[in-house]
Length: 103
Image (cartoon, rainbow, N blue to C red; front, side, top):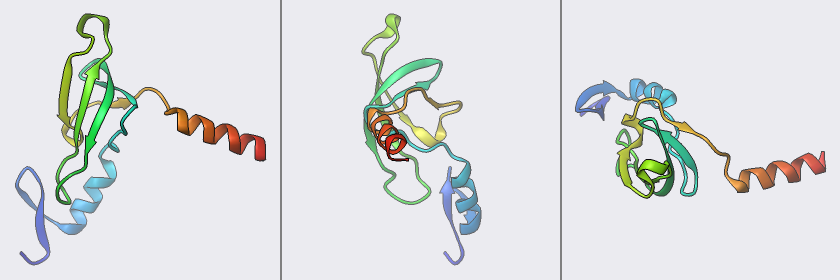
């Protein structure tokens, strides 16, 4: 294949273009995070990393909204538009509190 590879959607791009594109993609969430996807709030239950570089992360979630509570959704994270992490994980909060006390 030379210096090109498939970055996404079957399009052939140079490796450097794939790296630049990856910089602008949203980072995949971790299990336990609360995210907003498709105008709803979800609890992330499972995250499957991409099988190969340039492919998407599979994220499994359960809806937290009252009118759809518990409904499952699986998405290819990097292909979703307007995703957002809503809550900082408790591990991050504990670490921040620890470092605030130390400094």
